[in-house]
Image (cartoon, rainbow, N blue to C red):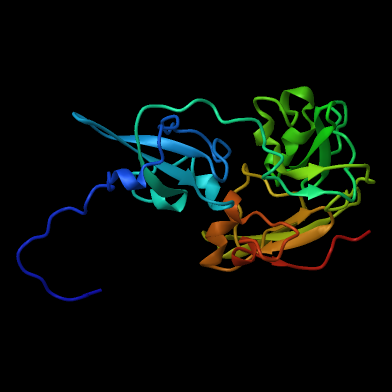
Length: 275
């Protein structure tokens, strides 16, 4: 597309400002390539812009679902702004972040969900658990099991407990609680048989072959195309038509129980699985 005409030349865009007034202080750890679960919303990293003199800048990981890009694209690469927001310049280093602050967390006084159990094997996406971090005074945190495909880690025992090194792969900290509360599960576990008719066009002979296929939860190992169906509990979602179906394979667009998330751009909610 022709957008206009030009003459002469322009220089490259300016590097991030090193105005001391915009400094965040000490530099967080340098960004490292990882997975979609390597960084979470609010995590900060530093990037070295020059070594002579040494100049570093800090970036903050964007909110979910854009946070899934934080471990895959460097803040200073093309597309880095999908996951990262420039926070300011930095100098030196900072120590590790503190334990969760109870002043900053929302506290649910109506009660705590069921305590996390490493022996439980039926946690599903959206399930809430409590986890004690202090006996005196009594302090409990509330964690939510992440969406698929990360939900599988919620059932992998102590290795993925909320306070473990790998816990963020399975659980998201959502607040603090006090008292007791009966556990709630969202979505409800589904044990029935749910299937859809998957049709594939054989281009060489221009025929369409259809087979009855199980409706499974979303998986990063499946290449989804238009009209494919996944489920969350008993709730079914159909992959939209072109061009939207290209997002059906992106974790940021995995169906959830929240209609305000990104998934409606890729999926359409349809009737529930049979009871």
